[in-house]
Structures are given as C-alpha cells and as structure tokens.
Image (cartoon, rainbow, N blue to C red; front, side, top):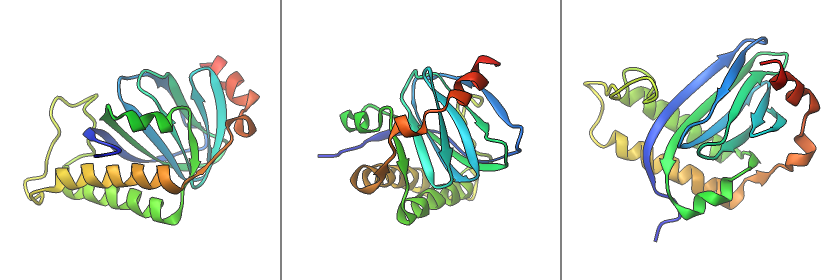
Length: 179
C-alpha cells in the first residue's frame, strides 16, 4: 500500500552555521536528513567524509555515526530526523541527492508547519514531551507526517543522485581526526 510510513518526527531544525561551526557527531536509532540550503558543509557518514553544496542533501541511516561542519563559509542547514521502519527507506541508505525546487518547497512547508505547530522546534532527544502550541490547528501533526512522507516519495521518484565517490573528501576525514 504505502511506500513510506513515518511514525514520528523527531527533530525539525533550520540552522545557520558560522564559518567555524563544528558539530562533533552522534549516532541514534532514527533516520536523519541534512539539507544544505546555502553554503557548503563537510559531513562524515560512518568513516567517510564528503562535501555537500547548496541544494543538496544527505541521509544518515539509524545508528550511523555522522557529524557536520561549515566548510570555511557560513551555511544554512535544515535537519529533519524521523522514525520509519518502511522497507522503502533502504533507497536512502548511503545516499546523497540534489533536490529539485519542488522538493525544497516541501521542506519549506515542513518548516512552516513546524513553526505553526510547536512552541519550540521539536527535538525529543532533549525534550521528554514535544511542546505543542496552544493555538496549533487540529491535524497539524498528521500534516507534518504526511508532508514528510510526500517529500520522501518525491525524492525517491525524481531527485538526482550524487556520486559519493566524486564528493569524497580527504580533508573531511582529516577534519574528523582532529575531533
């Protein structure tokens, strides 16, 4: 019936990184999508380092170690993490994609819906309970889930896949060694 079933949205953030930003890394039991809205970032996924540019995204599978840093300039990065046990999620394993304007519009819609729904960005890693705005419209949580599922379907159908070998970065690996 369904290609994707998102059971929970875990985090929904729009970050502005300074040129010296460095996140030391993590792994967790859910999926994470990092979309680079502007600038350029270095990313570790497992033991491999990559460079991603504006308009591109990377998926991190559950329990995959990953970190991210600004690549010598300011960057805006959207992080969306979620839980899904759908077999179709295997499509996104070890995947980097160049997103279309339509897919970026869905990300914008997700962020707007998040602002409309939560009193602060959802992050169940640090919050025991998501803080829903008292004036949030009924059905917004379901719309968030549906919107994310639409994004996954559209990305699977039409996104341009980026060759990971072409984006491998020795500098990214050496940057990670200094952490």
